[in-house]
Length: 264
Ligand SMILES: *[C@@H]1O[C@H](CO)[C@@H](O)[C@H](O)[C@H]1NC(C)=O
Ligand SMILES: *[C@@H]1O[C@H](CO)[C@@H](O)[C@H](O)[C@H]1NC(C)=O
Ligand SMILES: *[C@@H]1O[C@H](CO)[C@@H](O)[C@H](O)[C@H]1NC(C)=O
Ligand SMILES: *[C@@H]1O[C@H](CO)[C@@H](O)[C@H](O)[C@H]1NC(C)=O
Image (cartoon, rainbow, N blue to C red; front, side, top):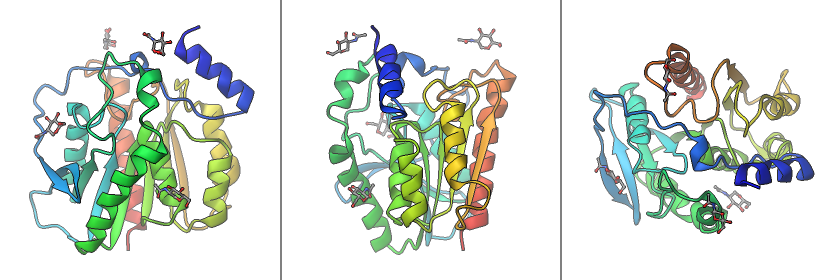
């Protein structure tokens, strides 16, 4: 049985732990041919962090915290995505919360994940969050993709940030993680998901609506589903496929609008 079949079985048995997608499930496009990462790697509180700043003046009390997928900072897709947030006007920080050990594109996620649980991932993440706050950042907007979706939800649950958005999250326990949001958070949350995602399926996404939708979560909740795209669509797109390109841009625009609406 391959990993994905195994995880699907696990999901069925445990009624909805969103599995991680195997590396082969992530579609690797050529990096947008003309896009060269604009930011710099800086060590913040001991953690390597890709920092990318707007070209114009920006509000230093606001930061976007971008939580990458399993391919981390070595993936140019993630750096270029961070640059897109900077171009929208936000100082943007993508911490290496994978501890210098991102999954290679041909890596084995079963063996990799053993060393990338919450115990390993949370300390570097929170080290960067507290350093940003110590430097005068008053509002953090988090945008997390795949693996980063779990940590976005954790930061929302823990009321650590001002607003959270996620695309095709993995590793969540559904609906428990959304119930925990409802029970203890005052942080607005937005979710982008793909119609063809076999990891965070439309059925699991609908369970988030059951818990948080229809005004049940006063801080703010919005979900948008994108047709014709699967897991990973908000991070990388086949440049020759107009549906994929539009969905990637649409996910960005939707998260950006939600964040702007909910920052003070
Ligand atoms: C930042 O660090 C990552 C991981 O080591 C590396 O792959 C990437 O090329 C670096 N980016 C820049 C702009 O230095
Ligand atoms: C990944 O590693 C696991 C555990 O060591 C192994 O069972 C599995 O066959 C490996 N998968 C691939 C595709 O090599
Ligand atoms: C959130 O809080 C829980 C419970 O205290 C803790 O176990 C977890 O590490 C925290 N996670 C983050 C990302 O803050
Ligand atoms: C990218 O999209 C084009 C147009 O739909 C398609 O012909 C091509 O096979 C796709 N490439 C990959 C690697 O999926």
